[in-house]
Length: 282
Image (tube, rainbow, N blue to C red; front, side, top):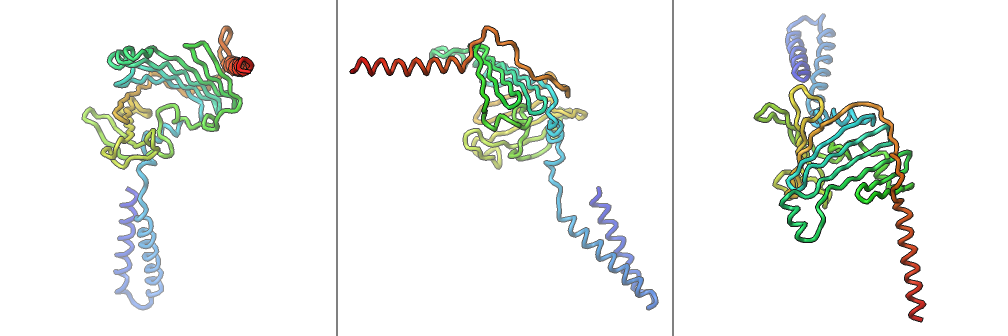
């Protein structure tokens, strides 16, 4: 709308310039000033009309994930895919401290039967990740084991909220915004391929990684997210969401196995076993 108003103003000033040409010489200075003003307006319009706004800057998806940048929120997502049973992920962030609780479903019935035939287990896996004051803790509920990492990879520190919430990241490419047959707004993005890191230019471009964010007309956060890549399809629904300051604290680990000590014990055992073998050989 602003562009049309600017064009209208420019045309109006141009008309004033041509009308002033019939005036007497005593008005020439005034005409000259008006002409300069008109030229300036036209030049400004020419400059601004060539700059098109990036539609990706005004999507609902960007606005929602920008709202998470304060890193004070809690949300729960339920994921349904064509390969796995439903899984649930809860993400809590309070500044650079955060907690992720993941309950991953086993393979679906068809894939599960295939796994069982191949001797693989098909059960729900439950993990938690805590990052507290730069220290990372990983909890494996199935094994009742935890690991503490005082120097985690930098990628786990100061993370973008979108990294764990199915959100868009800096290397995602906005494709389109359309209204579906049932009246929802669908914003589509291409993300990097999980193997090559390349972003597709079309859905026919090999194994395109596609994210579709669906909104009701009055919604400010996605009602549904569809994700597809390499013949896998997943749907994500937010079942809980709130902007609240949560305390990120470790649960009691009484009775749990310290994985760092366990790994050290295995390593010591291996070294001792090698030493014994060498002595026997001698």
